[in-house]
Length: 553
Image (cartoon, rainbow, N blue to C red):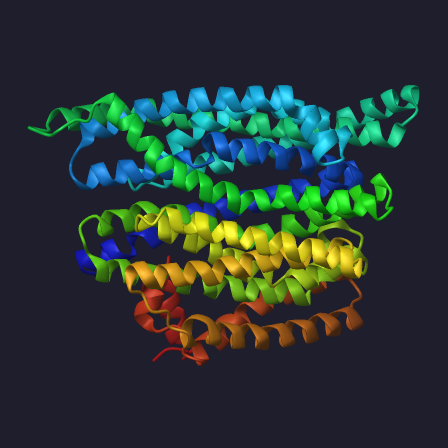
């Protein structure tokens, strides 16, 4: 492969490393969510997710955009051979993260009661919120270190730290949730609300794992950084006549880079918190009990969102890797390379998102029964079927946010997210007030938000890069292949259940066979050619396998 081709597809390989780690982390997260959900119940999962919605908004405002901003600045300087300046960027970013993380922690500490009781009508989530306060500072610093390595073009430190973080998170979360749930039950027996206090204390125990995971990831990343800096400083000393920016200018660049990303990410992610507030207040106004509302939202956040976020995480990882790669070619005016990278990234994510959406929609009840050992035909399964299409919308919108940021169009995702949020709120309130659709209104409104983001981001990408989206291979072929897979998977599952009547075996066999069927159909419909497959991770192996089975000539 030529050097040019390596550069054009290298971001995909690095993105896949991060995507693989993100997927492993999501799988670990899914696995520990099974016992966690069973310990806390739907009520406790609402307290747990409410605390995280509040925490995530403050995390986004204080530091969530830091990895992306740092990787963007580091990538731009590295491409120009300015290693000394990169080191200054790192120091300034660490100071910025420490200050912003502390401010966010103070806001969460003093404003926790207002957020939980007044705004979101979930006062028992305050215990989980209080546990999350110091974690804001740890995660802010951790984000800088991850952004630094991503800007250098190395996703491995971030990938390993993510996996270690989730392992520690899983172990501590389950243990602490179980221990504190039992303690909360005793407290509730004394205070007269056994169920609520048990769920509240258990949710607080679940959030302890988040802190443990963040500390483990920070220690690992710091170790790698200190080991690497010795080599890095020797390389920087060899630079001759390279301009180094002042600290004040670097802080200014950080702020200029962070603010648009911050606004975009905040609006893009706060729709969950806003939706929760609107839903709970309207449902409360309609006369539903607080426990009923919390149980609905516990199913939505603890089961539905957890499962659909697994495939969406691949898009998040690919978006994180695409920003520094796109920035590097964009600053040198290589517009054709920019378009090729955009096309490759979108093709890759659609090849994955379509079968995931169809598979989760078709096997909603079996998957829920497999994962949670219950609720195979209830509200959770109906929500999964209705909302599976969100996987497509959020995978593409998440990726396109990163693509726009990579070509220095930082304001576009901000404007697009604001428009999508307004539409989302109108749809949610309208469906609840006019049709009394309950939690199903939340699912539909959330999908509409993702769809509007996809449309607006696609328009912005075309406007500022000249990229023209190819439709047939990118969307139609994966959709047709996924539909064929869906029919086959449904038939196979029903057959296996008729013969063996064992959901675990029927589900796992159907999923594995479905993946093979999808790959075969994709190649038969010429959705991917040999060169495109070679650009994917393990592409050479996949090409050899396809040729042996005569799926490729």
